[in-house]
Length: 240
Ligand SMILES: C[S@@+](CC[C@H](N)C(=O)[O-])C[C@H]1O[C@@H](n2cnc3c(N)ncnc32)[C@H](O)[C@@H]1O
Image 1 (cartoon, rainbow, N blue to C red):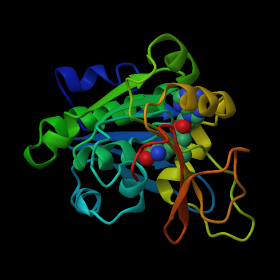
Image 2: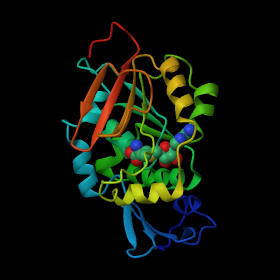
Image 3: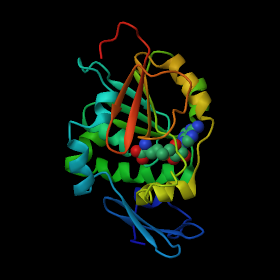
Image 4: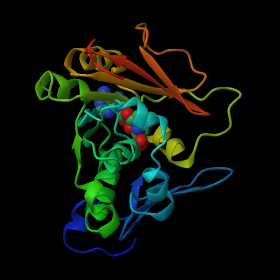
């Protein structure tokens, strides 16, 4: 583990480079590297919002995520991400000007994302987007019930974990590690509360071919090769 001083070390005090079982980590100046030691192949996953490839991809303006979470008038300013995970989707939305509150229930996943965000705030090219994201360690059902006043968030976003499709290739490294560390918690309630609390829309991300998670029919669907975004409009007068 790279020695860190001051605030950096506070994030992982007591972990000594080991997250749990077969997961190790190294802290870097712009994020972390996580090693999952497993048979037959170990996984090395770098988590950083400032890292060149991810940051460049985050800037692309034609992503379905951006179309799903905003409208043509660009009047959707605030997003509540109920399934924060590695915070990648939250950070991408922030790169395009939205203010995002990112909730994650799993302590380790939250710590890793919060540490990378802390690093990104200190790096010139990523600071502006990073400052638009707030990360909160909480269960989203609790958060929605206790802290999310109706109408405060224009868009509420959900990206639940899905089981691997039998015929699909292995998921990306970051997702493989998330699958090991965490799970969905009360996603149906999250969705119902989201519909009650969002002022403009609720967006649900799913694998392109998966069955719909909820009974409600979406008003809009945006697709990419492997994923789709279902949009549930709240305000009937809202322009897409
Ligand atoms: C597929 S991942 C999200 C990935 C994320 N969109 C990203 O860009 O990195 C789903 C995450 O939702 C979290 N989660 C599931 N149920 C939750 C709940 N009730 N409250 C907070 N987080 C939850 C899981 O712990 C997991 O980290």
